Length: 335
Image 1 (tube, rainbow, N blue to C red):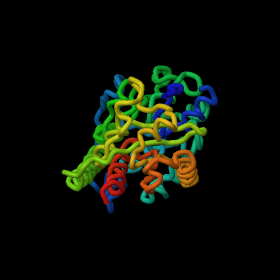
Image 2 (image 1 turned 90 degrees about the vertical axis):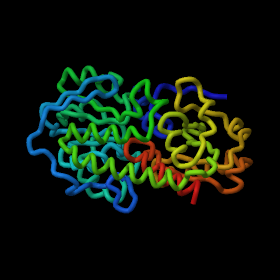
Image 3 (image 1 turned 45 degrees about the vertical axis):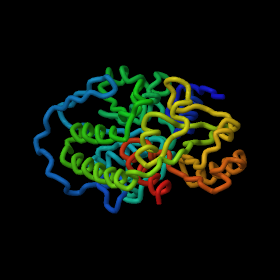
Image 4 (image 1 turned 90 degrees about the horizontal axis):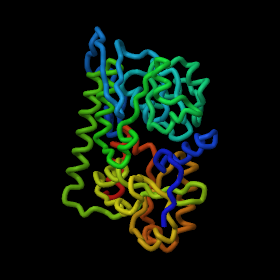
């Protein structure tokens, strides 16, 4: 029924994982969009204080805000821009995985691109980062990139988006975005801006909660095709986004123990016959390809027959973009 694939990030990022393995391996809601830059949200302290942060079981320490930051995922780059740290982001990677939100487009394009997919050791280290912010620990396998411990020895600290710390991937929540914003706000000396962003997130999530209160949860499967294989996402932040949006992930209790994604048989999904399918995509081209594959391979499923096929960007499950995911999905499920 299931095929457990090689250890990698969430299936929404299978393309990124494949690249790594191949080489061996509203926040300031303007109109209800996720974190937008907060120009003058609050006066930040003019005298930076030492900061200690615990992240993924490791202790990070900064005497002053880092001036050279690298982002390893588009949603992470957006969070740093929203915090006002754009000019300190000296490189980004995996830029082909998701186009930026409109409010970030100009700032996003101004940040140097180290790699459109996975970045290798030399360009990363040549950028002389003080801090790397990443969407998961899978990047740091000791082959393509140094391990986190090895980077620490070189004076480089690593912050991982909380929902994807090793051992926490099946328990992550949308609320982790606030944790990450608060931590990154302290690290970058932008605590006031972080608070404004978090307050905006809370307001947006409260709006969705009021809208869906009392509504019957919509059973659905969260899926993605990769290399002609079908994957289901569940547990952790994936199911939390679904539940907050007024849905119920039918694979929540069906994936292998400890897994938050797995390859599933087309026949299994057809047998479950969900009335709604939510499919993840990384680009407009990928969105069209995902929809075509679903229609071709799952023609008997009620969701296909009744055209209840809803696309969501894969990055809407990472960091602050998870709030966008909740809002967008709730609109689709409970218009």
